[in-house]
Length: 332
Image 1 (cartoon, rainbow, N blue to C red):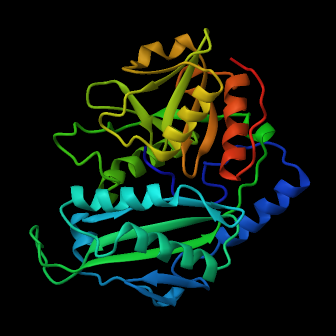
Image 2 (tube, helix red, strand yellow):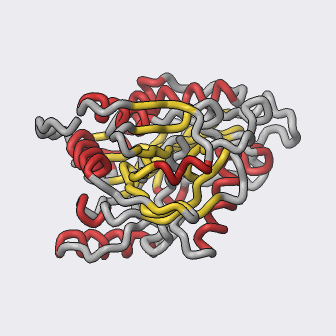
């Protein structure tokens, strides 16, 4: 899974529907925040062990990460002041760095504590957290084994503003112009910044054609994921099918939703899915830290009708991240 980066309120990740009054107010709040440049905001950022003013968190122009992509990151959500799956994200951050050949100079426990401090000091209630680790500027060249490893953690308010009814309208996906690479050619098990270049290009191309996002195939021509989220399909028998994550991240949200679906009695099938099979499915949805559970209404020439299974998982996920008990309804 490639996690969605929060974007402008009109950028295409939004599911357009007539919102309720509360949702409208939340939209306005997010729109106001979206007009602020990310380098010019109030607040504090945890940067290499210290809480510093937001505007003072800087990276030198000759940092290795900027030139050679030696950076890893996470996207984490806060709901009602509580961080969802924090330790799992911190563990993945550390592991991603190892895959890229460097060690973050903090333990998972220290990263967890620093993240909580950022949320507390910035008074985040519903928000987004971005930890990022990167190679510094001591050496400039392909090899940079003596460079300092830096870590920063930022967080900002980012409220959800559509209820399940609005979300059920579904989004439109184009077919991506790039494909997920063979794991022998890229560190696909790492949440590495460089792997997102083709995602940005594919999403920009989709937006230019009037779509919200794009579905990516892998190098074999098999269905992989969206540009920043994992993808699921529901067939006529009510089975949920999803691509095997062998060249993209097995997302934390993906695993959470699979668990919720199994708890409801739905059959989960992880397998190879070819593009010409899309016409056999009735429902489709995406999962991700930012996407949460987002139904899909269209992928290129194929149409889907967000239905009961998508709705159930939207509601179950929303309850789960907010620590609420799930309604015990037999939907299998």
